[in-house]
Length: 176
Image 1 (cartoon, rainbow, N blue to C red):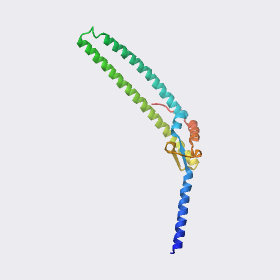
Image 2: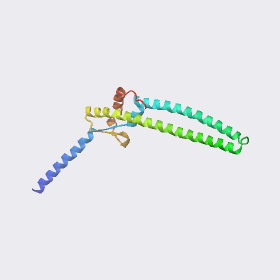
Image 3: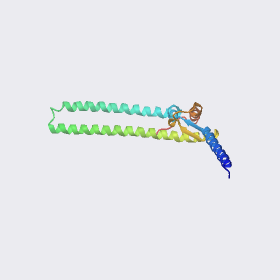
Image 4: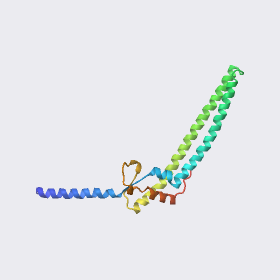
């Protein structure tokens, strides 16, 4: 084989390889998942229900804190009246109540966080078949999250189209 033929083969291979790379980039789109979580009907229903639970628990804990503060004042006022032993017993009981309150509050916060994570996972799982169907219908090779993109063409953002489809198919997500 001559040098000229080798150059022709290499040039042809390079052009074919380069063309395939350039063509494959046309089927990559991106999606803002956080926007969908916060602005879809299902996402808003999750946020609303979690806010209601949080407000209810906040009110409940504020009432308990108020009662604990009143009890603390009562114990302090009895310091000179009670014997040292009785006073220490009341202080220990009060400390136990405060510790129980802290544990209860922590458990409630963790439970709400867990409920939120499960609800968001359910929404994401519901979104997956919608994305798969959309990708199939529109010959899309890849849909990547917007959070991983520094710069991208606005035309490649499919968030608004997916939001419309998501809102039409899923109105709310039930909390557990």
